[in-house]
Length: 122
Image (cartoon, rainbow, N blue to C red; front, side, top):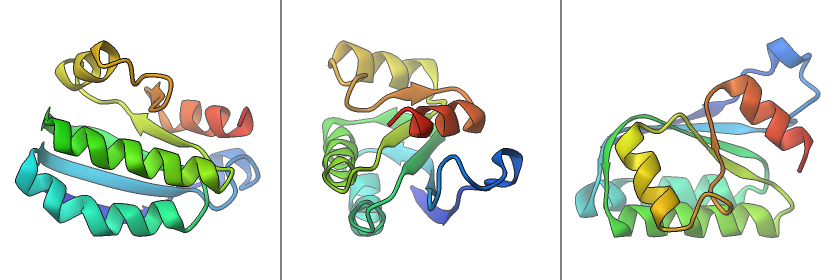
């Protein structure tokens, strides 16, 4: 599992829609080993109190421990009046999250533009 954190590029929206949004890109398996790697960096981003996009395009597997880290991050972001969204997870990961009933807590968007719109509605 690889994790990178960057600022969400706001140039398309003039920099006003999502404010200080962060983009967290995950690549690999979000199993117990992957969750160990992302735990601290994801918690740090969530604790910074801003909107967060978690790019899930490169995640090909998610286990319950990975879901737990995403849920904890989403709750931390919400406590700071922000919103966390998942960007374009693959169909298998999407199905796991929807069947688990987490699509409200962890909204799924299919583009960065859709993420910005979700932040504007927050």
